[in-house]
Length: 349
Image 1 (cartoon, rainbow, N blue to C red):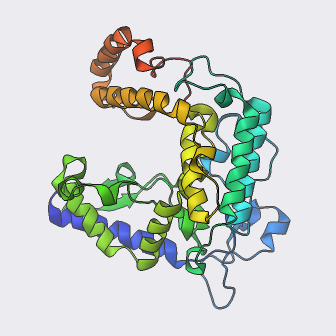
Image 2 (tube, one colour):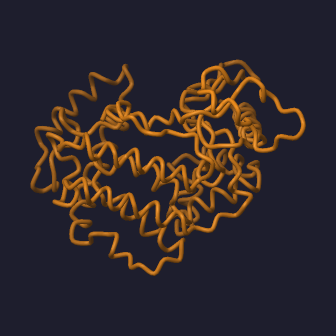
Image 3 (cartoon, one colour):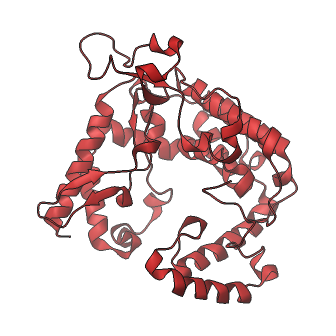
């Protein structure tokens, strides 16, 4: 793709994101036709500001969240409240209660412990207690009023969901809208890498070893609205969005990553609680060694989460995976081979 066409794609995404943020909704949840929500929800306005004409105000309403993390696996069987919620505090409390209900009724040890677990990782009550910490800490964060507006959010907006044909200028379409929902600006924006400020200048420019993509990213950032940039920085500083996402994965990934997010969240909230109260340092180093080996394995195989590969590369990668599985030293790696039946699945469990 030429730089001119790439600029056109970025401009298209910027316009779409700007349009998403231009509508401020009354609640947090997902958008439904009026007739598809319960009668009580039909009486509530779609938009926060009721004055003046608004597009779709008579056709749509905010209803229960269809966010995949709240319906994943056996969570779909739970009889729980899934929104809509009036504010961030009630939203976080709501999703935490859903995950706690799942832990109480469906948490079972995986046949293969990937990553390795500590005894605490295998105790559902320990997970529930840390989830309560998320509610407590998030309620103590100071959020600027400008970042509390509820906006449309395409949660899965990335390169693979931007369809571009070969014409010039290209025809552009966004796809995969099923995860789209309404949420506050403060938790809908993606943050920059945690270590971005400390990276040498050449690593920033050659991020992912692709100078052209790095420049395109900088061009994108130059066109993002100030409020969105402020939200990105806020998300990066607090880790709130990461903690919310991690809340549904503690049983699959162990408590370590969630503890780290809570540690940063505590600092951002000004809570006088030591980092050690969240992070198990005795177990962290061992887990990190394992994660590093798994990361190198995934990079060598060229695969993504849950072992996803393109169909044209499947046979070659399958053969290489079998070889690496046979060579894997569980003692040296600190845990079992990660790509195997019985291990946690990002898409299924």
